[in-house]
Image (cartoon, rainbow, N blue to C red; front, side, top):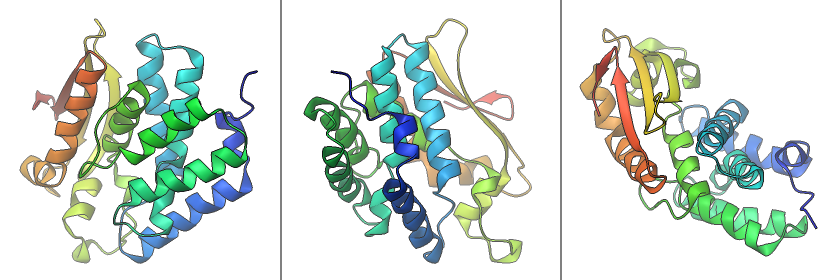
Length: 222
């Protein structure tokens, strides 16, 4: 029997929505960039685009969407080890919704492996989630309204005027294309913050059988 747990079902679940909301509030109190619905929905869109383009079946794509929208709920406990605590939380929530064990395994392993300090691409769902999460850099994620007090994370995100993830025409490369205002943040400063994340994107892309490329202001960087 097909699982009733779908991306739409998850988005209509008030408990899961509350965890997402409260996790973002916790990060806001600590000065982090936006990790709320705009972020998780963008991650879901990117991960599903990647797997759809590569020909994965609809349920695999759906599980990637579910993992994506739930991937940051562990921040409600603590930023440290939030991937692992979020995976445990997701297990309980999805088990209570009677999702099949095999599907729960796919979702929680993706959530538990999305952080660059401990994560690895273990399957297509986790690989797509990693890429979707790590490529979400944009001006609208910055909460700080005082430019004079921006830290490096604020500057780097605020400097990004345009961000897009797409495939090359031959489907052999996933491309992150950025337009950065270098008067706000240099390309080198971007890499100071995001190098580890971009290397994980490269590893996740390789798992999916494609390359990861990065274009900044029209020049290929990776």
